[in-house]
Length: 462
Ligand code: ADP
Image (cartoon, rainbow, N blue to C red; front, side, top):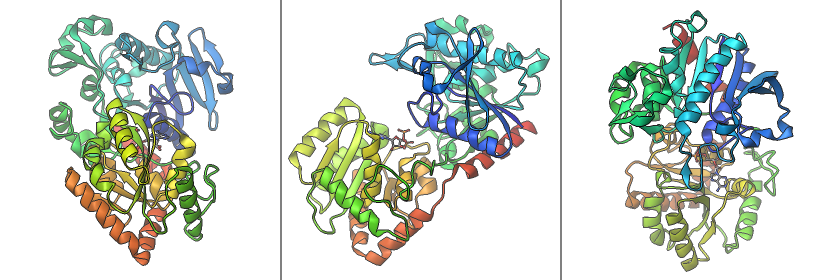
């Protein structure tokens, strides 16, 4: 099958979140499954770096190669993309994001024809590429080159929809008749993601549970009705984990490599972690780790409500994260009050993240909603038992056999579950069983790619 992956960020070229990991890993796996794949993304400032070995195709199109000659095409337009940020800067979103991503979408469709790559599937990701299905079924519908192309739109987080004021509608070159409830209108504004959902052939999200959740008022951010209307074409496929990066047997960032057969090594990492975090080396004390964006979505509202109580338990808590200033301040205050319990690191630090995944006993991840989530999968690979709220991808990956799950989003339930985990940790045999189940779980990209391929087949046969 011929597949064009369209995404606004792709590892290793540009990344702000999990979307880039998916858009970088999935195409390589599809190639391993003998599919013909290309990627098309904007060329941001950071992609000038010579390490990417960029080659020129046209005055405004360049490309690089990953995997086995897999081409990543870059749409260039300095006025739009030659900037430090992908979507915005310190002051917020760039004001011309509608111009930037509508330009990218049209140029992408034109490029396919110019390079004579007629894909069976265009796989779009998030609102930045969601105009592609809209254009395909409107501006490009009478052009025979595009006739048989099917589109899939993957939603990585429905909280981001690409909302713009009505006044910008003419910039899209679409007929005004599309600015209505059945089209791109959303409470008087333009909603690009909504347009994508209306016009694509198949909608996908990054976990089966999230695909159901977004059809409800609680999680749908206003798009639940539309998604529910299209429920026969809404699917969910878990993201995979890159085990070449996240593997305690080969991890270069941790002091001692280990595996299930040689689990003692994990306890050397625990001691080292306590040492570098300047926490007391108390024998048998449970060490909890958090590596996360500090945002309300990630559960920091109930966590900060519960934290005074948590700090009075027999545990140590290491927090690595950056995000909302509000949580920086709250956590700094509490860390000052409990210096022997909390070790706080308000920064992005990949080597420290590896050490926390390896050295903690329990990985704390209580997001209010989590489309897929990587932290729980990573921690399991390191035999660090996840403690999660039952939502989205967390509900699909963590069970009582490999972790701790609470199902009411309340601080009392979080506290109770932490107490339970501490109790179970005292039972060596039970704990080892949890570690074994966690380390044996497998969330490989290979499995996810096979599921995507089946979804592409489904779209093709529609
Ligand atoms: P999201 O993409 O919503 O932030 P995920 O759980 O899908 O959440 O992915 C988060 C990824 O970012 C994980 O790999 C996690 O280890 C990493 N990460 C988050 N915050 C930090 C940080 N402060 N330092 C290092 N790595 C971080």
